[in-house]
Image (cartoon, rainbow, N blue to C red):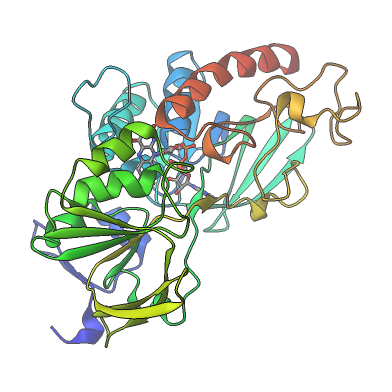
Length: 366
Ligand SMILES: Cc1cc2nc3c(=O)[nH]c(=O)nc-3n(C[C@H](O)[C@H](O)[C@H](O)COP(=O)(O)OP(=O)(O)OC[C@H]3O[C@@H](n4cnc5c(N)ncnc54)[C@H](O)[C@@H]3O)c2cc1C
């Protein structure tokens, strides 16, 4: 097919869609992007582990629940090639597998999942919370849960954007890893996600080079992972090294790195570069409705009390409960919460716990 008809999607029933908008693809494969009704007991923004867990607990305890998910249920966990530390899975499981199981469980309890569909605005009116969706429709609810997680930071290197998905990948790479068979793969970052990715790529690639700005991994990576990396001969760790250039025509074919002690630059052939340099919340659409910290993470519970005073938007005599935001009945869980532990299990735990606070809120408000 000609380049302008790509991407072209072929379906098992013989249908073909050229350059289709995401909602069209979603519709074709049976995903739902429109709400069945305009009012829910509980609306959840974000279908990562935290949002899915809250949905399972909420719906199983009788709350009419909807999840609105911008991309695909599973969130960042869906990108993880192997989650080794989630209780009950001694040999680990892929993020994709965890997401599929969680979605099946949520649906069994009657949770409605709108995906792909983004939430773009929030307003409150008395006890009701209204969400504006990207298709300009609106849904309302008694209790709102913010579970939008975080999004990976992009690297500021001239021209890098044109290679995204064509040799340059952020925070993921399960499927790309298999395509790296026999190649040298470059991984940027010194935290656990970069370490896990390097371990995973070492199963397929000829060699994995980790480019780390700091002078060791010790300050940023778990000890067990550093040990695994040290025992993997295919992985090389280049410390005090940063990426300064990317090269190629349409696809990545080379990179330039800067070695900071000497100031020397080196040009290297490269076709796969995976970037894991931290993540930020995308909470701008909340405006001033709920309080956030300077980086955009959402404040909750005791973090909202300053000098013994409740936030200005707080209307009740009690203090905000543990996972409640500066607006009664709006809760927050998972990576998007200020001070959260960024793990699958902690997000799932918060998702389970928050439902208890919701019941307490609903008992008083209805
Ligand atoms: C590559 C990788 C490997 C990892 N490995 C591990 C591991 O081995 N063990 C571990 O414990 N943790 C691991 N983590 C961390 C773990 O995945 C996260 O801590 C966890 O997914 C956070 O869950 P969450 O539900 O808070 O947010 P997320 O998983 O970030 O999910 C949030 C969801 O909200 C959606 N969203 C955001 N904004 C909107 C909006 N406006 N409207 C609608 N939807 C929206 C997003 O599309 C996303 O799907 C890994 C992360 C990555 C990226």
